[in-house]
Image (cartoon, rainbow, N blue to C red; front, side):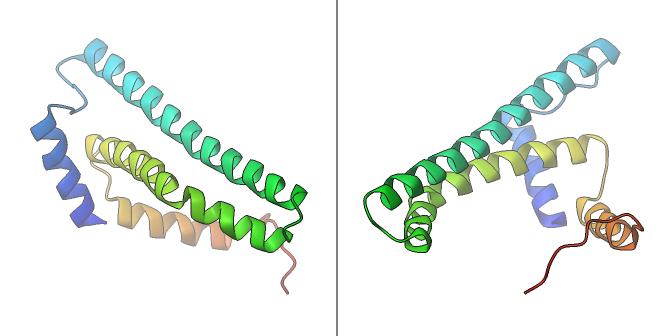
Length: 126
């Protein structure tokens, strides 16, 4: 993850896509703009899921089995889903770099915190 953050820092500099921090109003505007772009990418992930569910239902209605239909639909969206997730990761990395957050450390720390929660949801295991 650290390599990814280093790569993205250089990439954003080369593309002149850094979050501006010249002064408060410019930083605020830049942060909000990038948040809006991240939100758009997250919505595009949802759109890929919608496509998969619609394709699955169409195949089921044509007589295919549920499991087979969903596998076909997942395969059909895999490439575009990867692109949308990559876009999300690019914006998340941009925010992490701006706030000087080590994403790898933050991730493992957060997962430990979740594991230790007293009120966590308990799923049924098969």
